[in-house]
Image: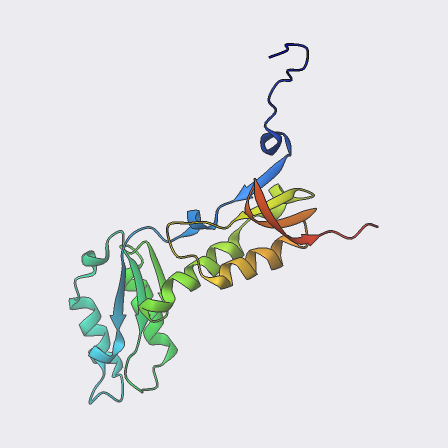
Amino acid sequence: MNPATEQPLVNRVAASNLVTIDLEMLYPAGDIVGFDLKDYLFMEMILKEKDFREALKAHDWEQYAEKNLAVFCSADAIIPMWAYMLVATSAAPYASDIIQAAPEQFVELAFLKKLAAMDLGDYEGKRIVVKGCSDKPVPPSAYLEITRRLASVAQSIMFGEPCSTVPVYKKPKE
């Protein structure tokens, strides 16, 4: 090898000032458990307030410690809004998160909730890569929502890995 022709290796990915967002980091930690209001209905049709309040007081809420609670009703019944509010007040001291949804919908809604709370100030004028590969299932709605939110502040948005990206958005020149 000729030392005069050797050039130092440069990590162009590291030098590119790309900011990587890994949506997998927003995946809800802990188990997701369901709380079915059907179990509290009279004749699987109506919810009696007095009986429901007593049942909630007797319920073991500690079983939801550090778990995510999906509150739903699997019966075709009209559930009054206050019922969800009563469950939330009972479960809040124990559960990591509480969302009104069937357990299979919990992950998607948890992602959207976290994305809505994300401070976009750190991404102002930046070149963003939304990481594509993950070990946990990231719902498509999370990719849509992060793109929708970042498009108002980012210089550009790409999908994939920093070494191989798909361009998604580029801020128009003014």
